[in-house]
Image (cartoon, rainbow, N blue to C red; front, side, top):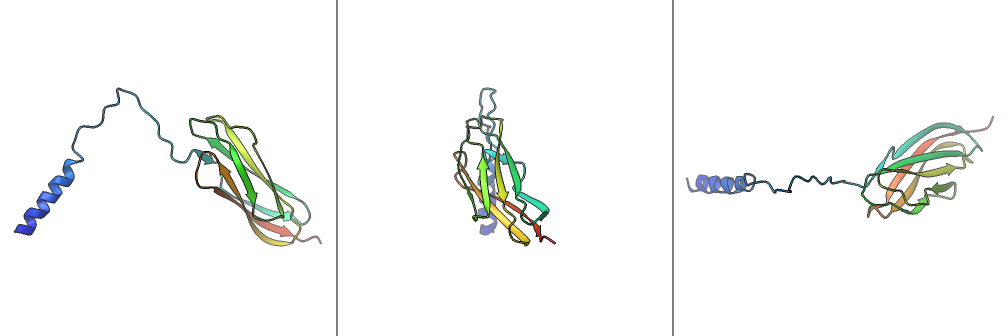
Length: 137
């Protein structure tokens, strides 16, 4: 019986925190953005590409923050990939890009990544692309 009373008391106290009056904000609504950058795609399958023909992959993103976003670093995983990106500040609501150009020198299946660091997020974003390089006949 004592255990039931203690359980009921704990349940009552737990529910009390959910039944209070909501915080008033004088009619204003503030939007909260989780993750300030929204990528159109974080992973792209490029399919089959001919050996020796470089392939450029473009990753596009939108700035969903209320401040300018700067890309501070872009690092491909290997020397077989070159990177380009939006060098100017991306205003709120605007889009930017990161381009990766893969040299396609070796035939076979590949998976490559590009790590992007911005002033909007603490953790760098890893973008991935993959495909198959078809050997020259």
